[in-house]
Structure formats: C-alpha cells, structure tokens
Length: 286
Ligand SMILES: Nc1ncnc2c1ncn2[C@@H]1O[C@H](COP(=O)(O)OP(=O)(O)OP(=O)(O)O)[C@@H](O)[C@H]1O
Image (cartoon, rainbow, N blue to C red; front, side, top):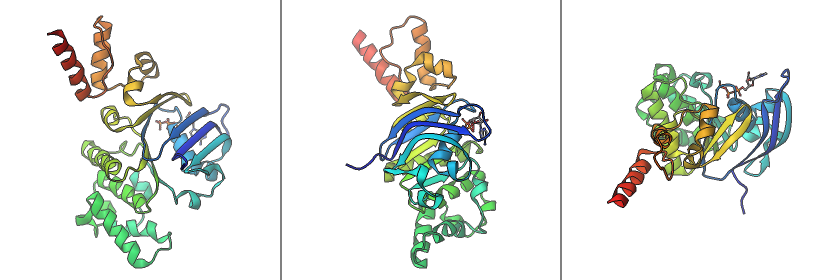
C-alpha cells in the first residue's frame, strides 16, 4: 500500500528567537489526490506550516522542531531542498518573488533546466504547460507585461512544469484583483479535475473552498481546531464563530434560521445543498 501524500505527526515548532511554540502538536494525514484548504486567523501559523512542508524550515529558517513530517513516505525534515522539490511544488503569495527571466517561455524553461533533461524535452514540457494554463499567446512577452493574475498563473506554471506530486500554495490570490483571483482559482479547479494532484492551499475564499475542498483544516493559535469535509467543519457553528472564520453565506443563513428556532437537520455549505434541503422539506410538508 502506498504512503499517504502527507503525514504530519505530533509536530511542534518554535522560531529561533521566539518564546512560545508557533505550531503545537499538529497531526494530519492528506491522502494522494486530496484537495486541502487551510484557513485560520492572521498569525495562527499557516505560513509557518507551509514552510515546513516545503523545507524552507529548517533549511533556510531555523528553530526547534519536534515530531515528523512525511511526504510520500519520505521524512522531509531530513531532506535537502533539492530533494524536496522533486516531489513538492511551492507557490508563494507574491508571484513577483519567483520571476527572474525576460520572457514567459524562458521563465518556465529556467526551472526545468535544473532537472538535467535534454533541451528538446525541456522546451516541449514548457510549451505544453504554457498552453495548458492559457498563456500561449503571451509566451514571448516579458512577465512584467502580464497582469498580476497572469504572473501568478506563470509562477504556478513554472512549478507545474517540474511535475510535482504535491502542490503547496500559500495564499496565491492575496495580491490579486477579482479577475486575477478567478483565473487562479479556476486553474486550481482544473488541476484537481485533470490530474487529481494533491493540493494544499491557504485560501480564505470560503465559497470556493466549500465547493472544491475534500478537506478543510482550520487552524487557531498554532493548533488544528477542525479537520474534515466542508460540511462537517462548517456545521460546527460555535467553533466557527469562536475562531472567527467566516462561514459560507448559505451556512450563515441556516445558522440564523436555527437561532430563530427553525429545525435544521444539517448545515449546507453550497447553494445546491441548500436547495436540496429546502426542496426535501417543502415536498415532505405537502
Ligand atoms: N522568523 C520568525 N521569527 C519569529 N517569529 C515568527 C517568524 N515568522 C513568523 N513568526 C511568528 O509566528 C506566528 C505565525 O506566523 P505565520 O506567518 O505562520 O502566520 P499566518 O497564519 O501565516 O499569518 P498570515 O495569515 O497573516 O500570513 C506569528 O506570531 C508570527 O509573528
């Protein structure tokens, strides 16, 4: 039986100069092909966890770590960054921090050159991925002539070209306008559909997350306080309110109905689920 995509066991982390633990006793299993959305208030430790999953901690940022983190069965706390990038792709909040080459095509080629592939194969792979993400018309342009959303798509394409088995994205839409956000989220939808890639993304767009996520992980003060399907996590009204994560709008409507004394069998997380619930109730009442 193959190992899960990610296994985090009893993970604790404290930054070098910090007094308190930033991550406290984290445990999580992400199966291959799962789409996980990580949420939580600012400063709760989301980026810190992403840095551990990608090897930035402990290779570039130091601190005290306890516990184990296995990706595809390998203990990544013991691996060098170049060994980790074989399996794990990382996309930062700010796409501009990853761009260095003068054209879109060269940018994607640049990352592939480190893999030691024959030049023809590098070009083929780069062209294929640029077409897939919809930047073909712009392949010869400077990355700096693209919109911020397109630059983030380019950053994702450069990582995808390396064919990672696990993609980690830390708030990839936080610097984008509505249109840029839409493009990035649509691309993540397609990656899930077309490649069943294991994806862990920090993202606050709750309506989108509720539709796409296999698993939602809610973090608060360095701990995982809820892990489960969107419907399980958002049905926990008290917890959602305590942590201060905004639930899907449709869930909020049903919380309010509950407050008014209406019997609610289950909290829906999408409009479609709500329609089914209401339809069931109306036809049952006839
Ligand atoms: N290099 C560092 N040294 C010491 N403390 C740090 C360091 N980097 C982050 N922290 C602290 O660790 C805690 C968690 O930060 P982190 O960036 O992981 O949170 P986050 O949930 O990603 O926040 P945000 O949503 O605002 O990006 C914060 O209290 C932060 O101040």
